[in-house]
Length: 152
Image: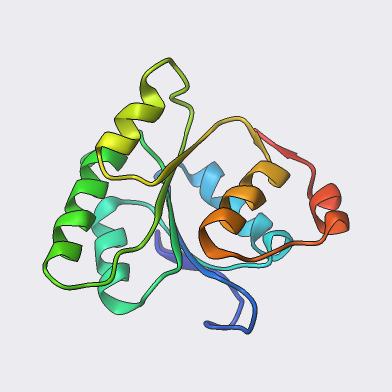
């Protein structure tokens, strides 16, 4: 399997937001693949900023979940690149940092870089779902949230 991994959900499945997940860590990508159905989303999962920019050139996403700490181009710089491209005429996509950076000032650094929100690790599936809901206006049933558990 190559670094660019796409969920098995059909693109544009009714009621499911289309989310781009950007994370360089293989275990985190695997975790997100496992959570896609529980989160009731359709997701493309990529390992780098370069892959994220390519994906954004091919599809319109409802939300981007962006890791901060990535090699080559980190999540803050990647967000700046995406925002620059959006100023050239593409629609603005909400970007949420999903990161282990949880020191005072980290959230503000993400917002200054052009991200819309911030979710620190570890997080619960309910917290992740709440973030997806906030930015895509989708809802997940309580039983689905409880079934999914806690993510670290």
